[in-house]
Amino acid sequence: MEIVDYLRVARRRLWLLVGVPVLAAGAAATLVLIAPQQYTATAYVAAPALVGGAAAQQYTGNQAANQFAAAFSAAATSPRVVDEVAADTGIAASRLRSGLSVSQVGASSQMEITYASTNRATVEPVLVATADRALAFLFSSQVAIATEQVTAASADVTAATAAITAWETENEVTQPDKIYQATLSELASLRQQRLQMQAVGNGRGVDAATEAIEAGQRRLDTIGPKLPDYEALIAQRDAATSALSSARQGLQAARAQAQAADPAEVASVGAVRAVSRTRALVNATVPVAGAGVLLAVVLVALLELLARNRETEPPATPSGDPVGPSGPRPTGGDETREIPVARVGRATPVGQASRTGGRVYGSGGALEPHAGR
Image (cartoon, rainbow, N blue to C red):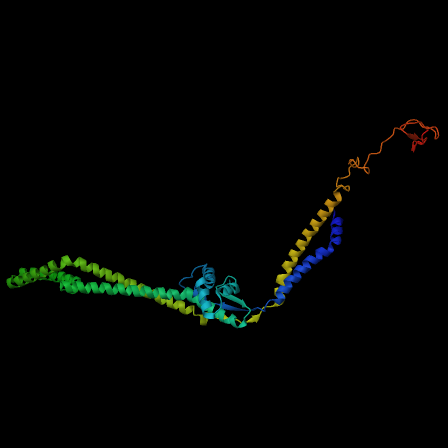
């Protein structure tokens, strides 16, 4: 088919090509117009200190903004946060999921939370609750975890200190490690003094120094075997003390991060406005009208195909048999009886007919009935 043929078909089926899209667009527009008025607003979350700033603990590096955006979007739409917002606002969780949307502003760390509802009074409370709960889910939990770590480290330090006190009570000695070191220093000094006294011939001084050295050696012999157990307890307490110091630093950083994520400082809600029906009409009718045009074209093609198939079918006899080149087949009735065909011989003038089967052939070859004798 050429373009002219297509145009001819389109003109003949113009009512279908125009009617289907118009009906589809009209139905879509009707649905949009009879639907309740929608209201929407946007909450903005801008916390630059949380991403690459002084309080940044979780989100650092070149991909910090994208990581924060992904984490915030997941948190805002997570079942836990949605359920908490539903409990705060009294709106069904399914309705919140259908009306909430979270998006990143460009490549920055700023986030937008949009909510649409037919009830204007619920739009702002939902946005405020969602921003609060999402930020708390991301950063307040870090404070709770850091607090638990500090508590556990403090318990370890307390237990290690109690073990040291119990050991000292059992062995009746306090700080044996320091006593051992002091005794070693004292023995070294006494030995030096004894040598000096021996050099000057001070026998009484030598004897006194010898007694002091022997007493110190007995102390070392008493404390020495017990010292490894005590030193192990001291090492355990030092490790617990170091863990406590680290946990306190983590808690301080987590608190600074949570303070930087305070919703009152980083979140703001825009004005609630009615959703434009014009935009909704355009968004609904244009795709539907396009689908209607496609459907109309398909219907026109099907109709043309059926029409061409009818034109190419052979005509049928009253009995239903198609008529071929040799005519219909005999069925035995009088109406379809085959007419005998006579052979045409030489021309015979009219009036000089020959008797041939009761029929007379004229000069023109026409078959004429014979009157008989």
